[in-house]
Image (tube, rainbow, N blue to C red):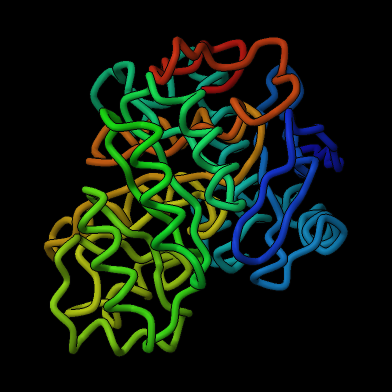
Amino acid sequence: MELSVQIERWPLASAFTISRGSKTEAVVVTVELSDGPHYGRGECVPYARYGETPELVVAAIEALRPALRRGLDRDTLQAAMPAGAARNALDCAFWDLAAKHANRRVYELACLATPKPLVTAYTISLAAPDAMAQAAAQAAGRPLLKVKLSGEGDGERIAAVRRAAPKAELIVDANEGWSAENLAQNLRACAVAGVTLIEQPLPEGRDDALLHIRRPIPVCADESVHDRASLEALAGKYDAINVKLDKSGGLTEALALAADAERRGFSIMVGCMVATSLAMAPAVLVAERASVVDLDGPLLLAKDREEGLRYEGSLIYPSEAALWG
């Protein structure tokens, strides 16, 4: 098995801001595996929140080059690397390679139903209330908006977005930006605005306040959940989990995580980092079982890959084989 890995930079259409900062480009790592006549591709987004950098991810992938030549496969990969971006890129490349080798689609190999078009959320970046209202007004025709919040002033932000997009369903992502002290106040503001889901209001490891407060809106774990080992600690705090392939370490674990979470009574959301369609394509297969889909990463880019996913408004279509799987 031969390996190629590289860092790519994709400019954004406009600055993307969350509670932890802003960025103007998506920095991704792409992997290609080849067995000679066939090749498979995968893409990941290193996430500084978890101590990942593009260079560290490339180094972790390169370190497996000898093992790949000795026969490392998708099954043994799961134990050879921890969950995270590096394993995600390799895992998805293995799936793509297997599909090309078998001349079948990945969903068939994974015994999944034929994927259908899905409605994805569209993200409103964190800013002052007036700026967020302007962005929401421009996207008001979309059925589902995801609103980035951060803590101080969030009541004004979500109210402004609701006025600007009165018919859209709203979900909120605080990216760990709230505290135990403002949790109840912000929950009330979101309830008044008709928000239907709140992602990760409190920092990972400091979310016990969710055990002791009435939650008028379902709360979804994001930074607090990575793979199946994370689920036990979420009971009583969260109503849903956000499955992201860059956290779970690939499609293999993401499918297992979603199934295990459903057995435990959690609803499923499928999310993404800001990346190209190559990163979204495997996530679409997990999203088929989700109640909330947030795979708008390519819509935030100035330009996507040539063979990228087809978006019609907020409708996202499964990938063609030319892209992945």
